[in-house]
Length: 472
Image (spheres, rainbow, N blue to C red):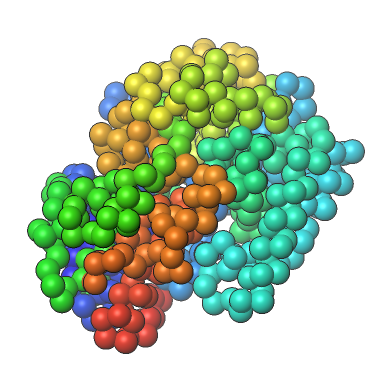
């Protein structure tokens, strides 16, 4: 059988199928494996950078990675501050400890506690509702959906710094604060911040992909890099199985007239969202944050007030480059010094701005200016920077259409119809062909669950086999 794409979902499907005894071959168009999990050296400085994802709330909480026992294969560091929202004056800080978060938010904290406590208390049900843990009774899922919707409704009622925290978490979905689907995603991410945390893998995100590839190869699987698949016929034939970690647009181009017109129309009309323009920095000193607590945050949101975050996301959605875009920043070397030469006193910073889909703009100045507004003197500590515009992302990985690294626009309609209306959206109309990318539930993120679901269906359809064990 064939897997197209070596992102986390493609590798998850490959691992499951290989462990079930099937001969698996993974095709990857890039020169290296991992998709959004690539970690590479800087071009002009010493150090390692994560090309796409850097912080992984779902890599330690999804059903696939828990069964795979990823935390025993890859070392993670867990910042005490899961994420923070930089503001002029006192910033908003989300600790892993929910009680401390509520306390430090002061008068704004009561609302945060009311929104988060029910989700934190029933986090396993919430994961089931999110598609991250399928072993949940339907009644539990229904209850968790109610909790998630309740939190999404409560977010707009928050005040001050708590409202800014909620807006920053929501912006991870590439949406405005007015989006109910985006707030739903933001609420789940925020709840994970107070349970599993938002961990950083030692050695970079590549370590997650490498652990999966090692397991695949131990079970007889093969990975072929620098091989772009343009036709379904080249990797699949009648009676065979193909699992595709590709965007709907790619699948439509690969399968062509093999697909029914209605399904093909759904793939071609699938909508893509805001893109990212990324800048990686090597600094000769830590970021000089005005609020020193931000030095200890694994992830920092640079967006200002909730209304400012929402305005920036709305402008980008309309194709207008915001003067002050929402910027998501991580400072991985603060927690993982393996990304720099031994004994180095420098630091690595990972940051991207949300920009219009397809943008070719170099984000260095706008991202630098955004950081500088919350960390005066930042320019003075920058030793080296490398920019990757939104258009670069699509050229690097055709799943990232227009630079959308989230696999598709997040709104209520597309939230429940990814990529089409079906009780099993991973199964395509072509017998033996399955889709497992971020355009399928549960959507974006390093969780492997799209691949898990697709492989589960393939095993059921092919031989009636149960899911194999995944532990080392």
